[in-house]
Amino acid sequence: MKWTEQQIPRQDGRVAVITGANTGLGFETARRLAERGASVVLAVRDTEKGELAAARINGDVSVWELDLTSLESVRAAAAGLRATHPRIDLLINNAGVMYTPKQTTRDGFEMQFGTNHLGHFALTGLLLDLLLPVPGSRVVTVSSTGHRINAAIHFDDLQWERSYSRSGAYGQSKLANLMFTYELQRRLAAHGTTVAVAAHPGISNTELARNTLPVARRVITWLAPVMTQPATAGALPTLRAATDPSVLGGQYYGPDGLAERRGHPRLVASSSDSYDLTVQQRLWAVSEDLTGVRFPVGQVVATA
Picture 1: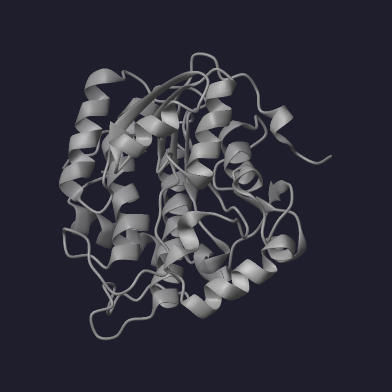
Picture 2 (picture 1 turned 90 degrees about the vertical axis):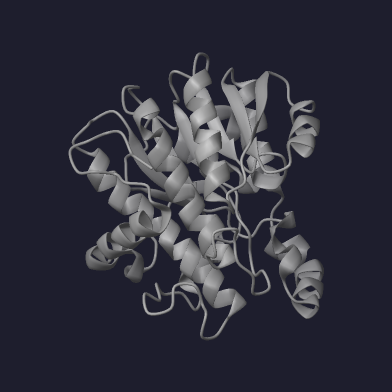
């Protein structure tokens, strides 16, 4: 049976924090969760745009400032959320950048790796103890089919200082999203309350591709009717990962169509590289060092 938005269970009493929720996939995810009764926090860099987005959603919606390119902002957002929200049921790491020109975050990290992976790594660590006491809570991280394309974790040059490839840096960040999810799930398993799940939207027609080269943008525009799907459909794998009662920790959801480009959400497999336990654990340790956020073994509160 095809999974559709009609199968999203009621979310009354649940609190969902969604990064990058003012547009595209994040907005559609927030809209549907709010319509099902969740209290939704739009964690966004531009709060003015966030307020405009919130005004278009029916339900209990608030806006919180979060700039994933700044660890200072991540820590401030986490501290504010901790002070105002005694529990979180869903943390959806949705925000991201794609194929950006060579640039760095405020902390000096390559923009795609810093935003897509390190910012979410830090945010998750700083909020994790608000999820752990909540049965059925989930951390959902949005990856991409791009994790298969020109993708590896370049420990010898994580910040692409020697050379730079837009697609390579994007692929590294999306592969890191999956490796983070799988290692996080191993660490959560003993607690029995919170699970880590990943999803990808296929090829969705959103603003994310705005940094692609002009020729690529023209091709995307020409092929959009047959190659892409709207954000309303692209958000469904995330929504299934976040709400389907049958979902298990460590799973990965994406579209069921050809090459996972579009279609209804189903359980999918990620690349063989993404399951490399040694690389996952090394990436985790490096991410702790770079962000200053710790997930100590046997403890539930991260420190910064």
